[in-house]
Length: 284
Image (cartoon, rainbow, N blue to C red):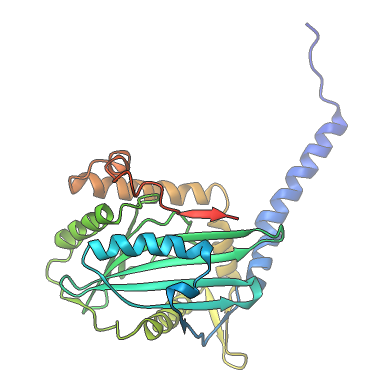
């Protein structure tokens, strides 16, 4: 059998493609992120009723709402915010369980693409906040994070788990195990609009302190620093994205096993058949 010989010119083309991809992803992309991730200091969340939520989002909200009601939650309110530079609309539905001092957030993000399609990502997060400023959160998000970990927040993610009664039992087990000595509180939850606007301000103040953003007082904008732009970009690229996912999955696996829920595979299998197909993301 004749040996295969790759033409030297072919190697040049291959190396040029690799160099282009590396340059585009790891060198140019942070500058693009820095331009696009500039944020307003002041944001406004507008109250909205569920019938006003787009159909691509409302079905997930209604399904999650039924699950939350069954867990003892009631709605505090629903809000929306438009992001002009991405033509993106975010919808947040906030729910409270006063008997256990827990909060739940249903989040839907609707983003149009250049291909004239709509991408929708939805998730639910259970949150228990304490009077010392710390909190415990349990979410079914599958989205990769681009911001540094908040040392005041203990988060476990269980992607694809849409049986909210099951996810909430896991959250409560975490609170009962890890919340000893702390006092749970709902003091920050007066109304949905104020809650989200305060959360925005607190998040970006933390990111300024972490060196990810700087505050432009004149323009009233949060501007990504070069450090922040690079780190936010690299967290979405290999191998850093895969390393993050491995760490998150390992943390969830360990917590599930320690609290008697089995591993992630067993946890997913324990879901009610009516809830397994919850819409974590969709395109139309």
